[in-house]
Image 1 (cartoon, rainbow, N blue to C red):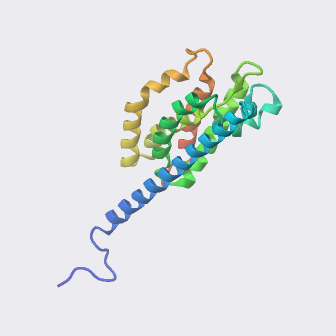
Image 2: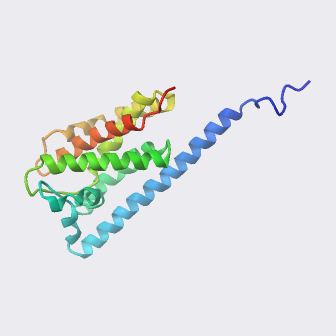
Image 3: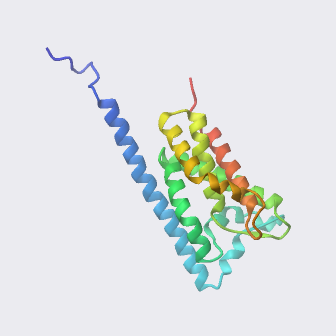
Length: 205
């Protein structure tokens, strides 16, 4: 006698669905991050051809006219070396951050950009110009690690632990130890990632 039928769940179906969802999410997050970083490179190429004129659209601390730069700064870089330094960690951490869903990832990115940008605008020295995706890098780090703590899903916990072990050394960048480096962007990006993980946490009923 068969134990399957229209009213009974098929064995293994739930696992297959979860695996399929995870693989779909992984593919989507990979494509998204490749496109995002490609856009940053395209912008930097244009900026190079324009003798760096696009950089003025970054965050100018304490200046009201510099507030729109909060949205533009993550896509601008001070040369190809700066962009290269951000590209690899951005691809990896962004991929892990986006694997749970593009919608949540975009919402988390917006929170990180706003918290990091406002932190830079308020705390940097007056008239300081800040550009670069480092705030996003630190934000995705904080988001992935904190997501494991807040959501408490096995996969998120594992991903959070792996990211923490592999990238814990970047936390030194959130301290004022390197002249010319916006530790404010790093610190507030990290804070923004934790805030995003809390705001977007799974609600328990």
